[in-house]
Image 1: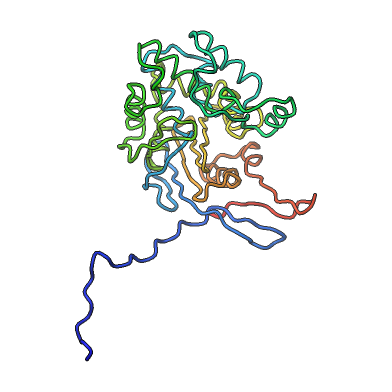
Image 2 (image 1 turned 90 degrees about the vertical axis):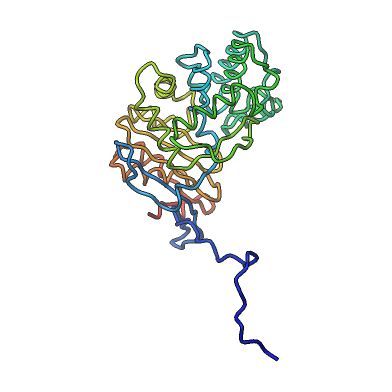
Length: 331
């Protein structure tokens, strides 16, 4: 016997498919599109209004190291007197070049600390050229060579200044990390959606791409002398300490006056121009090879036309030793 009664919906019903994010970049080899990189992007106008969205930039993401300017601002608010190269290094994902490591050691020594006090995981220099030279010299992974060591040195120093426990400085309940969360929320203009752990061991605050772009805009438009503006000014004045001599963030900040730029792991990028226009995006699959083409296209949409944009946007594909294709923006 069959029933004419239709089955009722229940909470156990299988949800429908989630729409895929839009394609931000495509991989073209020998004239054939062999793959795609999907993601979300937001562009803000100079007044902070949303000018363009692709995908779902209102959804929370982990900005990874794109959060570092906010972490550095929290260190300043907590009373550590940093400026110049030291402040830029506190907001850095440094390449592990000699001048980076020398200054991290100096910052530690100035506060009676050693590299052993860092709670970064031992790592090789981030820059492949530096990593090869490091290994060729017979050296092993160290805490100080991890790209976040400047940030950690600053965090340890401010703990000592305030009488906070330096052994637990990475605990989300630590006074410093509670202040970081406050700074992130204020700059982004939204509550932190989740707190996780970054690759360096520090607490990681999730915000939307809209919030991330808004935060970078906040830093470049902040009043002179504020913690946010001091961080932005130091990063822009010393971009080689924020990244390295062979890194796009350095090239952008050096060649586009007033620009603040910081990439994060898992293919996150945030940029603010001197007039307050800003952008943020994330490649869903975490592939950093798509960052340059997508960033160059987004900057083009903001009307930025400069040789450095073309340089960053170039991502050739090789077949043998010959160039046979490229990764290119698809929006």
